[in-house]
Image 1 (cartoon, rainbow, N blue to C red):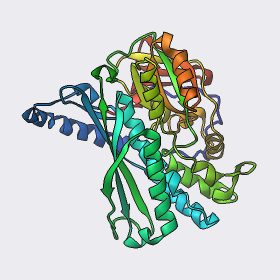
Image 2 (image 1 turned 135 degrees about the horizontal axis):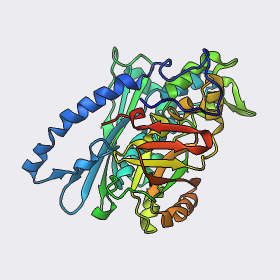
Image 3 (image 1 turned 120 degrees about the horizontal axis):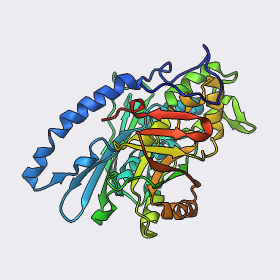
Image 4 (image 1 turned 60 degrees about the vertical axis):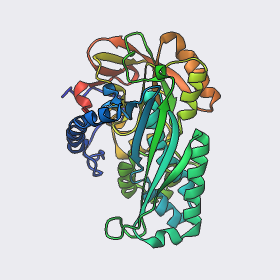
Length: 379
């Protein structure tokens, strides 16, 4: 393992609340992912019976790609995680329904992964598994979920194909719901494929702003409530409670990637900054150094979480998105245009750094943090 770097955040102490202490240990989860990927790779030969072939470089990426002849087809399935638990508690405290935003979060988890490989999202499917049929009897909540789901589909210009709504008493806790989405898209023309084969030294790193915690790190966020004087109703800043700040919907980034294509910008690689925080910038297997010279503003809720969890910068940036929800690697001459396109879509962006020749590592210079190859093992 690479050694921890000195950081300028809150010093570590016995009071530090880590993601592992909140119940999520990627050291236990990631080996299973690697084992599953190896077993899955052995099934790729089945595609040849249908006259198709996988894009092997998509193994271990955020979406799986199949060559179907005139174009590539990409697919992904993702679940929301535990953010719905925050919505449920805030509904109890305030009487409001937050499920329109929760719907957007769920779709964003899938679509923001799908677009990393250069795909245009085409169809979304829903999986809404409740702890009993009574969940669907709350008309306000159920209708908010439907309306939010459709609105997110409209934003991303995708068709909502259908879904599954099982009542799983005994599997899902009573009064709760487990939400997931699958998404299928096309990479057409094939030149839009983005699996990192063009990634190289000299490329610029553009970071797109997040809206807050998005849908990763909620186990930590929920555990942190125990330390807050007024729980979810503790103010992050005047007029904004912790619960409301956590429930800001995840940004949908597909309008940006589609606008970039229309503007003639071809990303060399993309990374969705979700679980593992900024370590996701190390996702591609290439031996390259990613040097960050400018970090985006940290959203208030994430700054609040870091402060109250007493995490140093290294811990925070290895867990949370810290203000950057999506990374786009482009030719240096396309960097500013990428920023301009994102801003025209209503999403802030900065040219944050550059890809360099060197060992595989992420160097966040303003914070004096270095993450090495051993800090992210996903394949």
